[in-house]
Image (cartoon, rainbow, N blue to C red; front, side, top):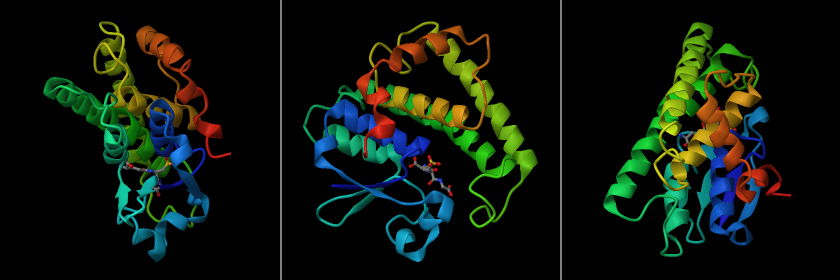
Length: 212
Ligand code: GTS
């Protein structure tokens, strides 16, 4: 399997962490797509992923899987022992709900802030920017942090008692926030404690060096 990604990207980090959790690193080769040069917007790359985003997983049969949630689900089910995406119908439902919430309320808004209210990937790539929208999305992301803090005051992980894909997505949100200097609010003690805890996991410690 081949992963098209960028080594410091927060969304690619989600798949690198999932690969680490599932012990699948030996089965993939990484191909770097330079976001700063806009390589993800070329016709050649858009033929792989219409949305022009990373990461993309290429399967040996030539199928391209985009979207972190879809890729994680695929990787989790490869060995017939899914746990990042849940086993029972209820686990699967809760994990997908919290994962989507982590995208909607934290990771995606921080990404929009980066693309709209900072220089983003530079003028060659950022063809339209709306700083006011970007700043509103940053504030949405901060509210999302407070929300996940309130969740983690009552349970050890984002979707309940076990580490899951939803935790990985919140980790991605905090990776992105740190890259763009959006600090976790001081009152978010439970979110900070959870972050300390999940950063001890080898998959989270090693994601950035995974392709070396
Ligand atoms: N919904 C997509 C997913 O979940 O895979 C979003 C992917 C995404 O936005 N990826 C970023 C991207 O391609 C990569 S990174 O910002 O984390 O490095 N951004 C480039 C762009 O131009 O939007």
